Length: 299
Image (cartoon, rainbow, N blue to C red; front, side, top):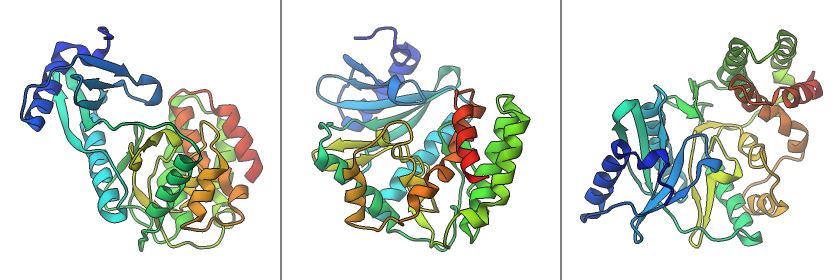
């Protein structure tokens, strides 16, 4: 067992063990740990007593409790509205040192082959089949550590500019990692959004952070995690499934079995990544050159 993992500190381990014991109605103690830090923006791991496992992630941010609580609401919302699979959420714990932990039931993962990629595509389309009257949501959510203002608007271009690009442009500029020159180019792109966003859309329910690692392939189908839900343009999710790594065409083929993909999506794909790139730059990640190349395509 990885004894130096932060989740094994007694101040964190004890409340986890108490929560899971209460959930199971029996004593549960951690004897196995599988580090998952490389798949998430938070320290996390699968913890098990050899019979029952939980996935736990932790945050020391001031917004940690609010972030994990909103994610819990989002998971429930996706299941209730779209009928997709989400993990059983055992609770959000506050521990010593202002640490917050989200504890979810672990699932049994199966290898991804063409069938599993198609299932992810169909799952995403199933979510997008739920439509709303406005872009946004009745409460804020989080994209990783970044707070998302979901104040509702009728038009997508207005929402994307006012609720995503402008706040994250300001965040990136304030961080010192975004040059004034590149920031000015992003501002020019934002001014052109009404002409760039394509035809008007009916807002669809979105996963909100639909990169491929946020779908876990299981024998029962994809299990959806790490959501940042709101209503908006379905191409936002489609543009993020392969943000970090390529995905097989089978994913998009599976999506098309349930919902169409506009023929101009490929031309707009990078437009929907600008907000994420601004957020990453603001967090100090090396994406400024990528952002510059994307902005140059649309200005």
